Image 1: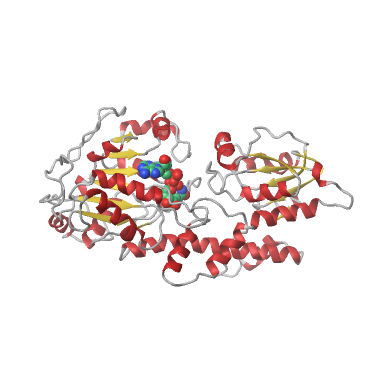
Image 2: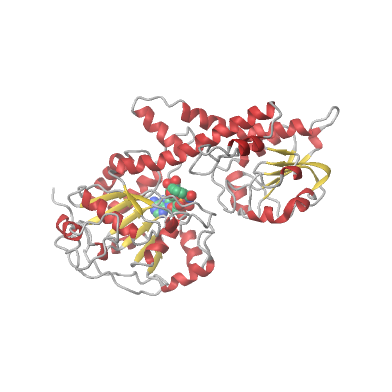
Length: 490
Ligand SMILES: NC(=O)c1ccc[n+]([C@@H]2O[C@H](COP(=O)([O-])OP(=O)(O)OC[C@H]3O[C@@H](n4cnc5c(N)ncnc54)[C@H](O)[C@@H]3O)[C@@H](O)[C@H]2O)c1
């Protein structure tokens, strides 16, 4: 079947008129898209890595756009997509698309609620050739689509590909011959080729590796951690043909200072991402179990880990609540695929179960420490410091602190939660937690340091202790304080 020519194929940059930010550089015109486009003299396909001088010419023959003609549109401007779109816009005209009108409006007003892009960088971006939109029709101006939408799990802890497939349908509706679609969302091995490509083909009427190409390049950014930003971490790249893989790699090498790692296939790249977080989840599960054992043996877990850590190959994991949309979710993508392939995962799911009950275990440990003969704990008040799933980040998705709160409430304690980074409205809507803005000093029977925000560290041991009544317990789940400054720690 001949591919439909849905788009008036123009490879010049056509910033839609309603964009507020000024139009700047144009993608070099080379009609029509792909077919016959030459690779361009002196095209930079990388200083190292895939040092393949013939690549531009091969890409031209394959029907793929030349590297210098790529006009990317990033689909989904969250923790992953916004920094990516900003980085791409340093090198070429870029569209940032999010279906959330509120998200686009906030970004246009200079506010990134994820905290990943500071207001000054966001306003400086007005000088960049980046266009932000919530109109999917505006995506026709791109010839490369990079999908960074969420990949959550459903109530039964199965992969929920609905946002990803919706994004595929949207991209498919604007896909033209010669286009490239790159997926960054975390998935199980095979999802790009077995789930996303059919959705793209259905929506576009085009065929993979004849009319359009796909790539997969997982994201490794660590929100709230300025040392591990997009540019600082080696990026794994892959593509549906060697030429597509080369083009994907060359595109990322322009923005990733740390370099890239071209994987031999899309499935390898997908598997690599999902095992990174699975390995971390399992390692934390092991130390969480060690913490439970050492608690019974009356041993200080941190002291044991410090001693063991003096061996060269002892891994420096620490116990804690595990949450978020990555470590607590991604292993289920792998176990889903494992089951589909006829393997019943044991170790991975055991780790998940243990990490999922860590909040309840910490609550029981605190209650045991607070209990005294004849003491009625129903009047006791506990202050939890931190609700987000990780430090220095406002993200509340799947936060492990919720398990702790629920278990303490089930024990009959009155719980207040304070988190200066979390959005109170989101906390109430998504977590059913009414955050307190200013904890009253001297009110609490126990203070739990649940999230190691820099703002809490800055308070120091004395001010943290002053939040409790005289004799109140300080439970340090994150090793924030010197051992002598807390009464209990994980
Ligand atoms: N946040 C991280 O630390 C991190 C790190 C590595 C990988 N990842 C993975 O990256 C992916 C994205 O995660 P995130 O944290 O950026 O998610 P996010 O929720 O912060 O952002 C996703 C954005 O996509 C938008 N969106 C959803 N469906 C859309 C659609 N069809 N079209 C356009 N926009 C759409 C949402 O409105 C939202 O703004 C996930 O697969 C995640 O597992 C995240």
